Image (cartoon, rainbow, N blue to C red; front, side, top):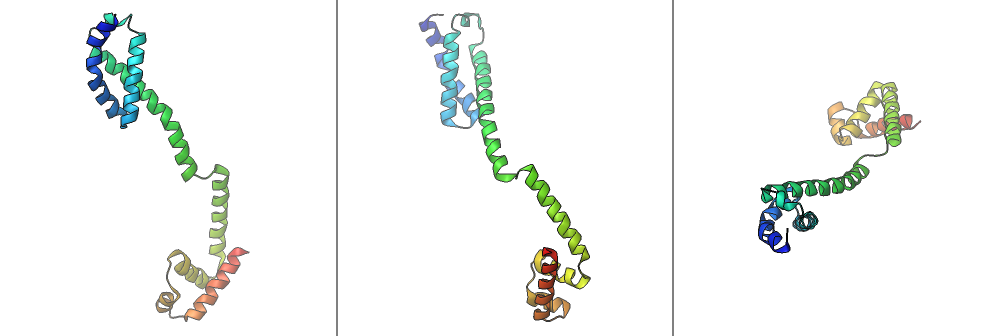
Length: 155
């Protein structure tokens, strides 16, 4: 295929190829790069392009594969960043689970009144005044009981 034939057959399809690439990549710069890469590939294959009966379909298929390759190259880096930001290392997770299990076991060992007050204050986030109204205990007594419960858990 000569350069003139290439221009006549393949270059008019550039707009269609760009739309396909933009649809797949969702980025103007990446879509332009993918179309440019497609035309480089087509130019290197120009000796065999005369056999292609549907240039639009063939070009779209090549472009689709190029876009998928670009997405695959991009994805591992994105996933790595997300994993690093969201998930702590497995050994830290195991340590946190063991710590939580120990705290829960220690909570069960607390006297029921201290456990109830600590739960209301820490887990439910209630103020000392609100707990006082619910339990009938003085705010000072509640502070003392919560403090004692925390000390027992720290040990």
